[in-house]
Image 1 (tube, rainbow, N blue to C red):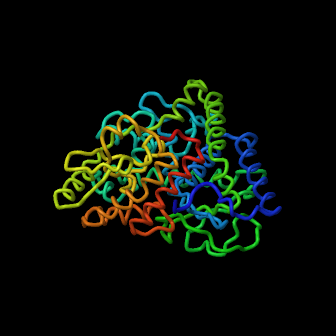
Image 2: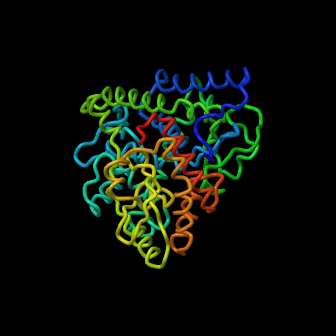
Image 3: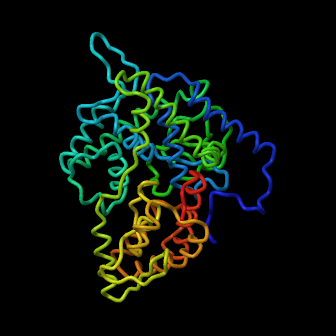
Length: 410
């Protein structure tokens, strides 16, 4: 099967002693920050969890060992999802040690008011969102054609919340690890990162690799290549340790939530309830105009109204709402066999040419072609809108996620 995966090939050269040492140091840095760093807020835990999720969501970045440039905006989007359940209307959960300034209590986290107002505005329009609502919000608003359908006031509120969170992110970036600036250098605009040192006091290195969709003016965190690789190699362990330490921290500082309650809030995953009516209508139009689609999992031909739009990577695994992740599929197989699982190696290998055929059919529609091109550019570092290349990149993403998180497959 073409494309990258989360597993090194058998022909790869064994790692050098230096590489092994760097990997060990990076694993120890992650563990030390999570388990032993002092914490007045949950910021440091949230930072590492966000980096871990970013590595998972962009598996073709950093494969050559280069540092990665991660926009603070991307990390802030993750924080919207993480902290969403802690700003529930009428049931806030503290995420910092209570303190006072003068005779007034201080907010536990610097963006609580902004995120609370964002959740209130969102739910006033779309109804109760639950603990996982932040995932839907951020992934939907990442896609330009979906973002265009939201009220201007909500978008303004969202941008203000991201800006406030980006400011808060500088604190754990600066103080993570044994000393100030010992793990990360201060964030800088992407255009300035070429040749910049990966951390304070380090010698200059080759330019960092930007996440897909990053803009030259985006303020970015430069993640050293060995640390990026450590997140990729032990993703499941980092996720589990983040959730464990965050649950304990919440129980200790909140005064209202047990570790079990915190765990439930932190692990709530989104359902599949956001509409995909635009995509479905466009596929129906394409079929009526002569496009041919087959189910990627069964190979069965599909007709107008005779399909479901399947999230290739299930929303409960990661809520990608981009077009490469939405493909027509056999309704019976999708509901009763695939469900919320990823394809196994054999099913995935068989699906790659069918996925390529689906993406090629999208190319016959001006609207779908534009949407696919834009969405691929948001996610993949080394793929254009060429259908076979997109299919291989999607297969690589699936394999990487399945391997990193040890997920159920069919």
